[in-house]
Length: 245
Length: 274
Image (cartoon, rainbow over all chains, first blue to last red; front, side, top):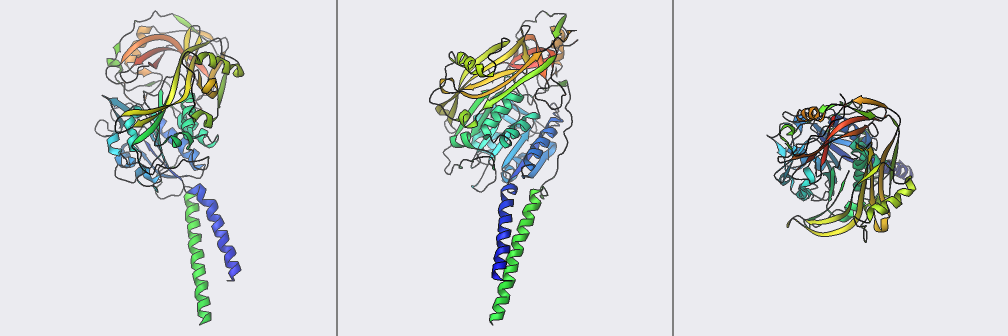
């Protein structure tokens, strides 16, 4: 092959790579517990929430790292042993959450036999600068009532959730992702607007926890605005904001 | 010898090109959703249920409210339209402010802002005006280290015939000098409708204890919680719910639940239609 021809082919391939990478490099994951052994079943709201998350993000070229449901959801999905949600830029969890004597729980299908508490994920989210995970949504009652969930953030940026009871509504993830994608809103504001709209008048206490204030104010979904830098040296502080619906 | 070198270079070039092509194919496959780890795909949305049960300790909740007198019937107007407004600039809204309005100043400033959006409706009732901050929190000491003025949240709810309409809102975030940070307004207009019979509060309380509430909640009501108030009201359906065809109202008994963790009442509703 002539050197010039080879150069043209190589350039073409590089351009293809450059076009493909930005839309294909991002991954999301989801855990959905909607059928419980001893708690009220939430079906089909978790399934519907997943459909919205899946459709919005694959529509942007994202791929699904994993989707676990009901009895298949366990600690490993939340990166207690590495992997899990660390393999995805964005993780959405749907299910029950509880508050008992100052401790908050992500409740699994066979609650109270198994559950997730924040000590199990201490500094486990975003274990290195090259870990994919940046954001985790905990769509459940109570969990972020305990600000110590912020200790899960190593290099991950933020957690979105609730610090009170909350009503189930599958339109929440749809509204949130629409705000992120169609309106290019930053993530915290997208969550604020989505919760205040979809859960209007229900007096939920909504909370976001970020590792830095820059992330709280400026993080966007990739391709829809800036993403603030990760915190290189962990100072063991977090930034949070809250509002009512 | 030179020919051999040229041949080797050509082979190497093709190998490099092949590797890049393989990478492109792998990326393309990943982009269209053919990842190895993917277990499930989702396409359709199945319809949600209507009135449903709620997990919790509702039957053991302390009743710290008087049972209200129950009218035999209530007017349920039709919903003609819903004024939905969503305004705000995320950069302004999420930015820290030099100062934010006080709780006492904020309602008047909110009314001024609302002049650009049809004014404050006559059927609006102020819920509260609360200065909100962004907090720097130390995980080691469990203490707030710094607080940064963010926005003052002002909330209204619609009142129809003296009764709250759950699902309606005017929710503002006011920045320095009352500048608008964010606004969500969901405000129905009503037609004539009809008069329907309602179940007495005591009967609604029995339904409440049996977890027959209009909404599911994603968690338990903590021990030590109590019902602080019971009132007749309305619930708006269908404004933000793609599973419903048209917006409509339902009469509901509103049970305000106060938990040890959250000082503000959480409304749980029971269908009041007889």
